Length: 137
Image (cartoon, rainbow, N blue to C red; front, side):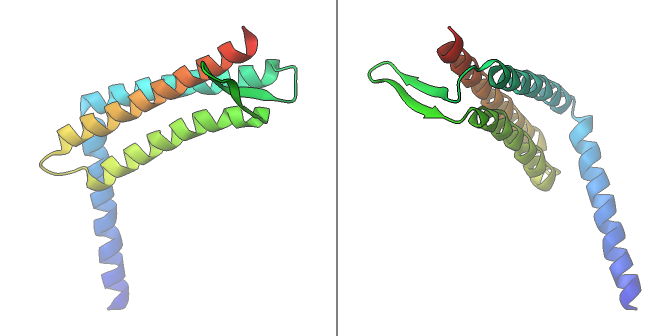
């Protein structure tokens, strides 16, 4: 009796996950958002690696303020935190959409979460470009 109840719950959970994933990927804008996010993430990881590889000193200038000049210097490994944060935004957005997804307002939730995630990743890419400009120009 216990085994059949456990199997029933597992099977219904598997069906629910399959339906949710199918609805997520069948919504065409989600695929576009994911393609854009993966592209921006690839460029961000490449730029972080490029900055790390071409740095000649043991310190990396991470922030420059117009009023005070350089105000945040750190370990060169810290440059990899920016694309990692973008990857976390990507994963959390997809997971949140899969959890709260299927329902009446799925499409608007998808647009808000996925577009916000792509914009956040673009902001992170812009900050990596600024770190490059500060250190190499």
